[in-house]
Length: 265
Length: 330
Image 1 (cartoon, rainbow over the protein chains, first blue to last red):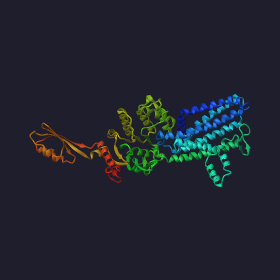
Image 2 (spheres, chains in turn brown, orange):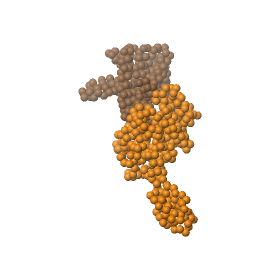
Image 3 (cartoon, each protein chain N blue to C red):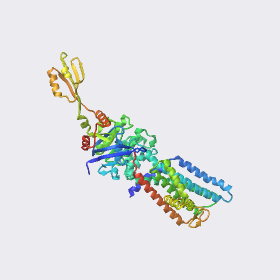
């Protein structure tokens, strides 16, 4: 087992090294930091709403740009290994293919965690700069957003294990959007026929519930929830994290299974 | 020690389907051969013959449609089969952001080597393949020949018992090719088995203990280079001194490339000629023998003949045919 961890870590470190060379990531970093700086202006325009604007923009930056980066990395990093045949030098070594898939994911997870960390620092600096202070609700929301990004990365890797970057990107993006609005879709089908409800019910069961990680402004556990006021409990954050880990494990297991069957010609 | 065979391939088949038409393409059609431990085995064939497909199947990159193979006694595609094998892929593509030291370190990690052993082995191998001065450069800046050397270094990180090289001389200049040939011989001297594919026949003749020729997904011939080329005498070069007044018509009947300059007669007798009887006749006519040299088939001519035969669909081996037997005796 220790040997497997060593091999996974070797792939993860190499993936990290590869990913940090992608210039697009630095562009995303600049955009997110710029967005956070923009809250200084937006806050001035919305009098007495500086705190709301800074938190909302900061969290949206983490969730939106974190997820988009996860899709981008997920669909490209695995695919390019196959396309450039760098994988030939790797899977010909005594490494199992599932270890390779997990290693790629862990490496991506490291990169995404660093990005989320930088986004978070940018938001916290803005909050401190404007004497708003950092509430526990913001910390919980960041943890939830981080797990959402990790689930989205697993979705992207799953599609990338058998499809092209273009299709994988479209599938992953679609799943991310649908996963975010599953309660809305459920509500929309309430007035539909039983058949539609059943189909929608089944479809929504196979889509990760990403709305669980974006709860501000929703009613959760029969309580209106907002990052600016009453927010979810740590228990909820823990359960949502477990839910995320379950999806990640499931998606990676399927990705590994599909990858296991592939020929590298 | 286990089996005396480093590689055992039995009736290996691989069939692909084209993406849209779903048309079957048989890349391997029942390949069977064995490689003894400690041998250098050359795997020869034209482009598209099935060399790389065979090698990729052995290394677990491609799953065979049917058939089986073992590396050092372990069945493919197991992890155990790859643990004691070093592999250089064809036209190696490595992570171009790494240095050769980092590439070797990555390979060492995947082989489960501890950090000090990785560092020491990488240093040794990088020097051995002549990349000592370029050790800190990214692979992106390497020429094709340098990449090939880097690939060799990473392939040897685990001090493998079996080294599988897919076109190791590809892209190398004559000096580079000689260095790779020397390295292969050095590996054999260390007791390792080397299996390499190539279409450079002079390299095969120079260093291999055994050769297999593959064409159209089937093994056409296998054996030692001398076995393969010595079994057929294509003709006999004869030179005699014959008095100018003697009529040479009887001696030159059926011969090829007859040339008579002064009292010297040179010709090529067909391979199936009874040379002793011909010499007796020549002596009887007053000739004095200058030289007699059988003209054997070269590996190149054998290769071209086997490949042409396979392409016509009439020559070469079918499964269970004589070439299969030769291959199995490898």
